Image (tube, rainbow, N blue to C red):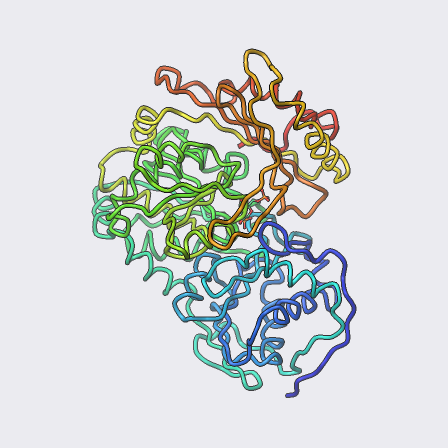
Length: 543
Ligand code: G16
């Protein structure tokens, strides 16, 4: 066994996006491609010698190959110990939990989240810091700079580690500890929620269906829901993680989680339905015959979190990403909680959580989380919902309509135009940007634009400024449209159009969402010119 230095040259485009570097599998399989990025991470960190690193992924195609490359490079770079989930598996929130619990310097998480997997699917890699959260922009910028000038990396010629065997092995001078991927996470969940109450709920005949979409949450959900909490066998469907997610698209939304939606809106529907995504950090919530939009779910969790032991004393504050609906703002106002609006990307919540300014946060993209880890956490959200249902004795539909009655309803939808030509997407964004000043004061139908801006965020903890985070246009009625380019796609560009209106009148709360927003949708199309510029006549996904 020897440490060897390999000469290399930079690859273009290794810039981390909203959540790490995501590309097609064949790109990651090119010789040196992954190694260049991993060395660029190590070179961007100070004093890694003697430190502990956590490594794991969502089990998608290329996961184990990538882990073998990373382990050899970690040993060659002087890391003392690497903790790896058995068979290379760790959900994103579990990785965050393990980093924090074992005091690791950080972790490398292998996932492209909800993006499809397989031989020609997507792969991704991201670095999480000592707090267990996604690397801040300052670090991802340093990593990207390194990728542009890299000329060598170091590795070991040792043979592959055995990822299937729990216990400790060594590679050069480095210890590799293979751990059960579920144990630490399950223990943390048990410390946050009233498991006895939830057990009693299941024992009373409460029926749930959880769709793991053949992705990483299967083993976690099976162990906790069916194992510890006594939900009926078969509660978790599509529970075995597969390298290609069974050919599916583990993005829990009405389009890709259609089977679950059909079940929950069908005859004899279960009491509660939920699904998670590729790496286990997203969630959707359904009740019998009803769907809770992620922005509403965030608001409902903020309003009811005190029903779970971990949040009994009340929340420190709440935050949401800019495109997320303002439903949670109303809860914050009513309860006198601090409130923050951040750019899209979980990394922006990190400082607020570390500094104790917030204890709950979330995004329209089906992500909710709290200060228990530094990632959004799909199963955590499902368990918090279960705790609220168990404690309140109400159904999901009752909780949803009572919430709207108290706070009013923020009708909300997101229209995605996926894989559009990048130049056309840029033309949409540039067109909007150049027109911002002119829009203010313009009337559309019976509404008038009051604010038109390109969202910019100043982090209240470290003062860093992040600009150009999406075009936000607000109307007099408080209706709002937001347009931004996704930072997680791997094909062309994805444009996201977010639309929101507010309805205080309870007699109008049951109107169908797309109908309630129809007027705004056509105004937004007119202002943005998305369809004309991209040649698309409809969004690819409406959620
Ligand atoms: C990531 C980020 C989220 C973000 C989402 C969508 O989630 O962690 O903060 O909301 O992408 O981002 P975009 O709109 O740029 O595609 P995940 O679950 O993909 O890691």
